Image 1: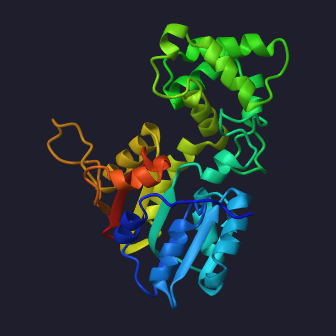
Image 2: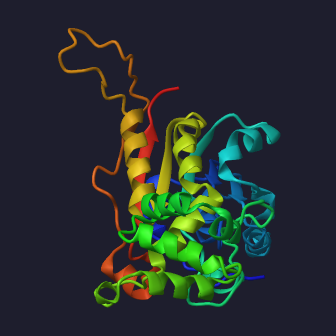
Image 3: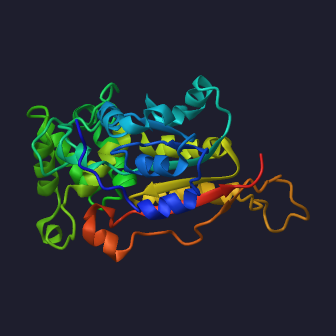
Length: 314
């Protein structure tokens, strides 16, 4: 299974990671292996790349694409939240760089058959790891109207979350909602028609994003991962996150600021008691975005946001 894949902001990622021969890097979301292959080209002959992905299709693809680099590569079918265990298995305590591209791959959208796209008629699954228990169909058909509204509003930032949730509950009373096309039509029906045509995106876009985030616990995993991941960097090592929506980018930005050790004490305190430490420095004061030329070649890159931090101390 070979992916059709174009890595996002490849030149920027390689430059910020300072890839050099003999160093060790982790690609937390190996996807189509585009970033990994470029990293390997820079770290040969004796560098090491650790590739992780919870989608077994991605690991199968990476095994093929990175075959010429097999001696310098370790691949793991796992969630990047388990990086500590993965490094322990390899007897590695520190690495020189970490990259996580948090977006869906083109394969997942077009060829996985898991209902990530509202433009296809596929089972309503949305699991990145096909071995996970909860699917989008489970949430859509079993969650209360209140819980559905919360998911759609908080993760999708959808204005019509309540109407959509109530319409889903009303429709499913007549039988389970099973496919991506069914759900897309239900969402379309729920939004007042005078607002549908004002949207620049498909009416179901935010709902599908919200369900995918909920199914895969994406924001919880990201939030808890960042501080731990920086702990596995050598001093001078760098970590890069590519996010594709505001909720992810907000988490990365906030956690990076925390790592800079800004005092969190109230301004009227006579002395600092929060004991904040400056563990890292943020290298991307302004979010880094793809160039117009890249977006023209790869339209999927248009909403990408890159943030980078460098570890200062152990």
